[in-house]
Image (cartoon, rainbow, N blue to C red; front, side, top):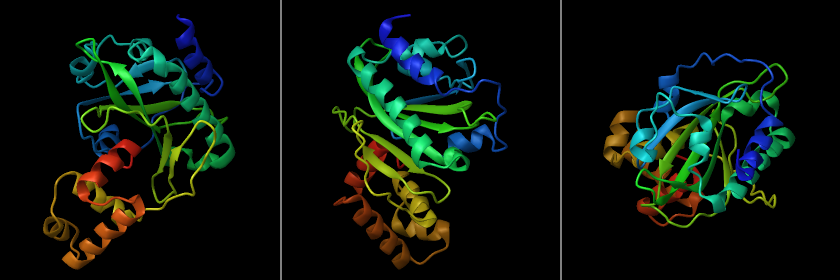
Length: 251
């Protein structure tokens, strides 16, 4: 195994489960349907216990040219741009450290991890991918078991990697945005459950009147929520909002 990839495996070896773990009661389809993607994407489940993959989406072949039936985790890692491997290793180590110091064990399954890196596409060229991961299980010692990973091509939104990490709180937990590997942590940001609903509907192209009908709330209420979301993200318009929220992993 190349030395660069050994850096990644060392990070995971320090925190992966030492016994097999079960899938959560929530269905896999429910998890994947809860994530909005704005470009070509694929997903898989990594079991840190033995580093095996399962539930690999067929679209991994469209993105990387890898066969979903036979792809291994190392095959996915080999697509990372050599100049971004140190960042990915640092990001994973940062997340594990942050989880251990800042997030109670019982809250770990209520966070989505997010950062970006360059990756080799099917045609051999490199493009920016957004990495999202949600822990699905922990072992009895709190070590990481299974994780749902989603990789979305976002070079149509940006070709510049910010080299920052965001932890998106689910189920009402606070989010920690745009953290650097130096440990610079912004104050937690909060989005209400309704704001998250509206944000996802906006990203899917629904108008304010359509959102009003779908959520059974007044159009003026939708308008107020939209403005609150813009204010919280420091965005000037909806186009910028969708781009920023995609890059930061909010949707």
